[in-house]
Image (tube, rainbow, N blue to C red; front, top):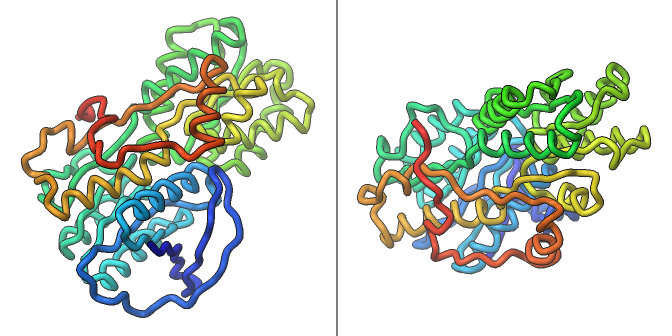
Length: 360
């Protein structure tokens, strides 16, 4: 099995070996103008950026699945540019003649439609995750649009907020860092925070700032928030762990790490380490390793006829996956099985982590 990471801006193909939650060295190879016609489909992953630890783990899951089934795997990265992300997918459809399976985390919610339409037109099979418009449904592009996967962002946002409130004693001021506000996950997690705040009147939201999922932006914003609010900040709610990690670095710079608890979502290694040390109160993981591999597995099994998407129930076409809370109670066991060791996934258990159909 070969793996490529493609950037059309440089016209190069890079091969990256990734440890969980971190990128390693890069070797550049000349990108072929045309992928050879083949009976076996190419497995393609489309994600935002490998500098994001969450997506780095997603890629390792995709590689693990591709290795398990002996197929070529290509990773496309949009670097947060929707136009680039869509163009790269269309270019890959042309190179493969549509003989491919795509697992895509669209950069932005509107991106899902042109991605799905291009795949259906080319005869490729596609699974989307996290972001799609509410009026876009797999059943409208049978059989090529196989499934859409999300994780209940409202529940996650509310759960981590409640744990944060409990950690700070049920009263006091907090600040919050939101994700790219046009994405489904960011919108839902903010709703969960709002629900938790409504139920806890002794907690005051001092400020909510958008850090666009990025640790660097969160670091800068957190520095400003510490200057503005100082000791009034008793806790930090972050819509993802990468932003939470940026906030943690800002706290460390002020010798406040471990004194002002942080909560986040994604279960990246940095956050898991911080839960172990008490700097994070908790994180929630959707298991990006599973997402990276299972999105391809579902699409590939549909393509080769192991199941007919048109005959599957609604909870297999648009569904919530199982999320796992990581707190001080279970962090050591999680660390042993998911950080120190590569997670064990039964790639044949396509629907084992379905928790229900997505709310419409």
